Image (cartoon, rainbow, N blue to C red; front, side, top):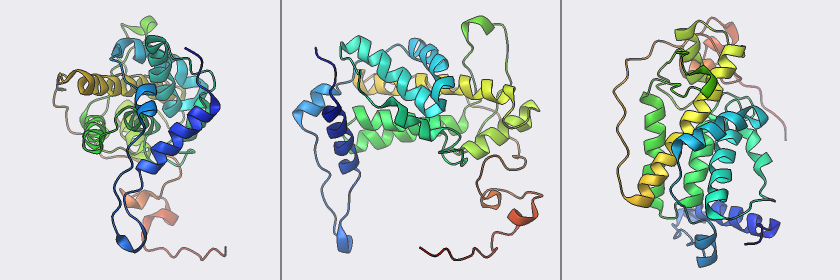
Length: 259
């Protein structure tokens, strides 16, 4: 089968953006557009091996960050299984999710990538919403990272429970448990393994949707600890108190910015 052409990619992305529009002007609801049969065929999901995808995500993450690693791992593995070359697919655009979207500490890039993949392969709104919700809830409640690279099978890295889908809080929780500092080598390795975990979990959920078989439930984790000082560029007082004077008061006046 010929490689995917640029216009095919643009059409697929445009279709995905169009499905996100659920209301028009004046608050009137609009039906969610249905993808064409060609799009259905092109992005037909086939069950994948979570362990294979996890290994690929671990390898890909340093090249473009957590969101890139998840998307690259799943789609490159799917491409091989589906005999659908993605030579011109714009994988580079998913680098924006690193560090919680451009280093802003917002939504975890790995989760952002997982949700994008679910949106790509799952056309039914209710199923799509359910799968994304399951992925996010799992991330919030599970002690991570669990993945161990092949050369570190005997190493037991510290795990923490994020209790949030935000990169800022997730990293803070892990630093509190591990004693590592933000942006350290240890934190980078943690995020690399976490990327593999999220890629594998995304595939497990997609496999469940494709086969109708429920995924294995995760053991209930221990309660997370209170997060420390800020990570990234978010306003810390949104979630917790900090010792930073300019971020302690949530009512601080924000200057008007002229357009």
